[in-house]
Length: 288
Image (tube, rainbow, N blue to C red; front, side):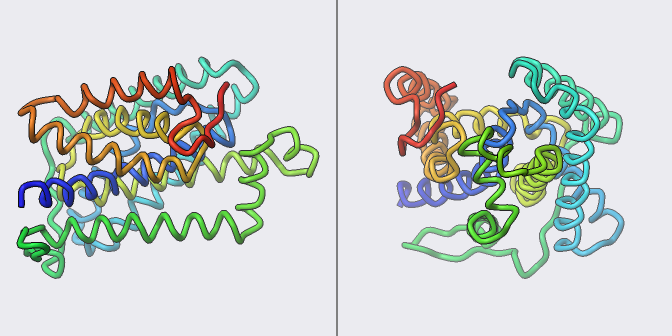
């Protein structure tokens, strides 16, 4: 039964990583931006949900508002800062987003992020359910279902909408996208906004599990980057597969090593992938 319990918890962690990793993959695929502020945006999503809930707003509304607020911040971040370094070397985006991460984290510390904040889910999501004689909290099932539904919605939107067509064109061939008269700046504003919204809802939904504090997103940032590398740079399908692989490795590694064994295995796997299969699990990733 221990193995079943670990698998279920690995799937839950993978679902949290899924939304964060899809955001990283989108922003890299379209804009070649290495977003080091992603972990801070995860923390901001978690803290925002706590703040909105503290105002007496329903849990569901707190999640939605966290998504909207951080998504809008992402748009402003691209319009005000990232757009200024659009055609400069990738290291510039890395350094700039690192600075943004420090700014957001510092602000969260000043706004109560030094202390662990608790977000209590509604009663309908409390309790446990049994699967294969293993008890799993209902809320963790909710997080998994939410991540899957949002991922499916994103993939359908990317496939069926005009916006999705533009995103896929820019992801596949930026020069071709320019030839199709796609407004690059408007597209990037929206992509960074969607990326921020995805990681925000991931952080907000994870708050009842991990709690909320200023640096709660730091480990998620590391795991999300590893997920993107394993899935292949710019590959959404690869990120989906890799998110659950990473979730399972971390949970099993921590259970059987009693420490950070999962991270060690993950680092070794990432190094092996970079050397032997740099395009990721599905061979769809980009080599820069």
